[in-house]
Length: 387
Image 1: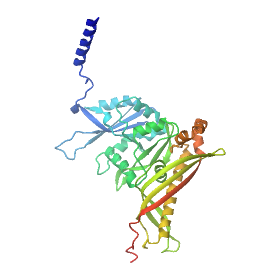
Image 2 (image 1 turned 135 degrees about the horizontal axis):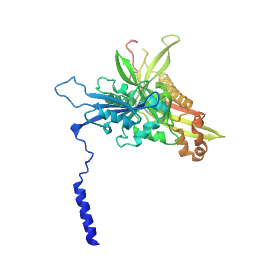
Image 3 (image 1 turned 90 degrees about the horizontal axis):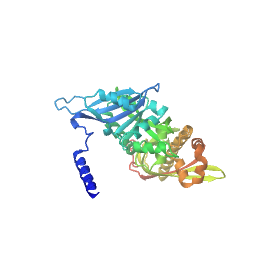
Image 4 (image 1 turned 90 degrees about the vertical axis):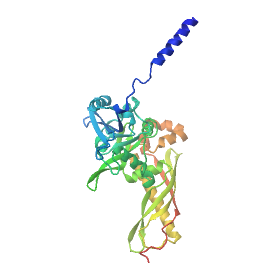
């Protein structure tokens, strides 16, 4: 018995030595890496469409040679479509290298479940990859748009979205992992940054234009720029961004002046209040910032005037958040995560409401308290026009 056991171990060891473990290895010179991957469905819903942006090998003798290749194909399934792409390439496409995924508006409005099923049934997806929605265009059209000084859409989109929060305070990156969590969890719905093709100085370019709003597995609408800023303020501790306020212009009777304030940081908290059968969500925003640009020749040495800037800054931020809430409730989409907050703080109430939560969410009353404080007044001295 011991001899048979020992022979079995030796045989297994020999078999393991003979197996390299690299049966699926692809040599570098035989592969081509996808940097962006697009998934959509045909307008009639009969075919799915897969698109890829692939990095071409460098060509030292041709500086103006193309650096990327776009391929797109349709089929009954995404795997079938990608087999068509594979047949058109002399090298094996490596989809797992894609760091940017672009969802088409057709598939988003029909059933995002087709896309989710694709993600869940393949190991060629990075959960940290960024996710976008091709707004009023297709993934292939987005990937085919060059955005100078970048030479491909993947790099341009990544830098566009990562620079949004510190520069504008409106949009933030959304990863595949975050999207999958929100689309499957109770009491919260996902959003996606929308990529739009726009003509800039006679050339097509890409811009982030609003947020796509989902309810369940379907896109139900979009947030505009103001509503997107409100979403960002209500959901996150934020840093950076500029916003405008309007004040009376004392130099012109009945006139108004526009001023720009900087938002250096803000913190949001949401508290559910339940009294006499009425649920109210109380949103509190504590924000700080600086004077950034003033449309006035006057000196800002009056503390009462600085207080007016703070008051109007608070009202502007409050207005953005209210606009987001109103739009989300109109869509019956809890992108704010109020259901999760209720589930954690008042679980019994959540159990009684969750069966019809979209409709319940749409009717929830809310209160917003916002305090914006100026911390730096770099430009409060005398202006040149005043002198």
